[in-house]
Image (cartoon, rainbow, N blue to C red; front, side, top):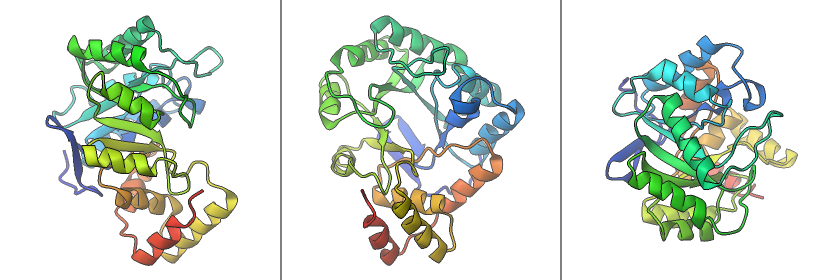
Length: 289
């Protein structure tokens, strides 16, 4: 792997798990609307190989991207995997024939999802499996004990090394932790959508990673204008500012921006290294919804 120093350095949520805070989200490697194959499979392979060459050791994926397509491309591009590379996947949803995302939290569905991830990634055990239990961008209240217990059993069987959660509440996190330890939480969060501010701080105190998705999602037109104004003043892109803000927000935040372009991947890595001055941080913090 390259010796490039990535923005944010590394984070260690478990004794045997250290990842670069700058990761890569593989969602966009599938076709339009994360369904079917990509228009250019060779380009998708090239992006993954570039991510590893840049020194990224944290790839986020799921076997329901495609479905199956993204994991199969990851295997084609990177298998056998470098020892330092950690692939984080998620279960709890399916793709239907219309491209929908129905929940799949029944015990047999979760087991099959883990088996499918193992097969399509070419692994004997999965580094991290997140249980996705909420909606598209917000948690669904209720107990998650039954599905999380299934993953804990799969962990005990040696098929999963570490467990995480996606699109969950603080109460659901506490419930899961009463069953088995977790190493990460993946929720909708960015500088304009900051419902999880207290949760991030709580997880940081516990040494648990927080992985925000949609770094530019849910912005109002006014908020977008304010972000663009700051970015223009800093001679940067809005995405670069948004990623840099997340890295500076808390040391346990990991980034997983996705792209199907090698050039865009490099831009994301370079942009996230932006050091935001104090006046910019104050201005950005004021645009939270």
